[in-house]
Image (cartoon, rainbow, N blue to C red; front, side, top):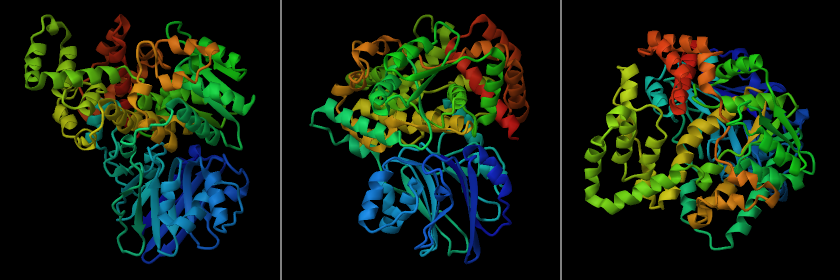
Length: 622
């Protein structure tokens, strides 16, 4: 796991600020490479967090001694050993044991088709010295970030973080107001936009080229090399449980390869319990697990997680923090964000706690809910969609009925949310977007009168999954979650929250071959029911760990109301003041503080947290 930065252009270039901005992503070493190609300069910068081959042989930028090709790479190629053997069969000789060299020399043999062979998480820039162009690529699902921008002087800059692009001084600094509006809808900025107007996210599962021989450097139209939806049409006929187990175990064995200590974030839920139970016999005492003690009996999972670890004979650590330390870390989590987020603080806390035990690589159960239908709205959206089909043209009568339900005037927000949901009853993907909505149009217009029509912001988005793919409802919801909430919130947060602590997070459930396998399995084999949660995963849990199957889904959640009305009160007031003064909001911090103390609903409290995070970020980076 590392930080990368590339620049092509003619402007004066200073690498020091950029390397400083990326240091937390790669504290072990840093490197630069520069060349003149035609009228342009190309600069490749890298900061390294050493995971595989800790020797200088794994240093980057890495140069192919035969071709002169150069690579900077962030991430891990999990099937690098398999690819290494294939390349040896082609006569390729290696001087390191790193996956970076496999990627670089694989390009020598296979060209850009190397990306189609990769199972991993990655973003990389590879200079082709013969064709005088830069290959740009990002992993299949967007685990690793990659951003790019046109510079003021007509060049192109690319980096692992938005903040690194800004620190270069080459990119215009304006905020993207549309992204701020979308943040209010979903609690995160939606790719390809970023919080900065001139910076865009490079799309997952794509590669592109920058031709260095032209006077004005431009990125070619990205080419898609992988599409999960295409695999969804290929239903599996072989024994499902056996094939699923084999692929998941193979994925885990690949993802625990490291030359540094490996750990696991362990909750009391199914997803991480499955990983722990499958890894325990493989790692034979070398796996450490971590849980955070929330000191809240209604939500704390630490005792059950410790029970799981004890039964599996794993080294287990529970993070107990003083209130003073926790308050400091919460503010630090806001500071660590590359872009504002309503989430991610929980990952930051457990990551920072586990780092104190020397863990550099950690595994997470992220992604299982999206693939296996773990969220309750998988069932509710499917039922609503079937209801809409059953009613046909009569469904238009539902909206007036909803608006006139007796007593709705007391719960106008719920009425608005249900109304918005039923307006999208013909589309599972659009219903999912409404289900994921943070603030409703009326809520937004109450505190941001200058905002555009928020209903149209959602309704006008491309809906390729519903209209073009001809897939079953639950698969459409799964793909929508992966394309939306997973990519724009969970994965982005997982990256900044762990990299801020100089730690690499690996996500076995998002291994490419594993995703291809699961998406092909019929929902009759993986659908959650009242008696059987995520059956494909539940079947992997031994009888001694059945407590994981019966616990209500909670997640690792903080008492946001207590913190916003107490230790983080000043943060809330400062954030709201900045949003009001600099961005036209009309927020009343005193009223919010009063509502928090008298007990606002948990979902509303999360929205106050989202606004605090947004205001904190915009003020800090103004």
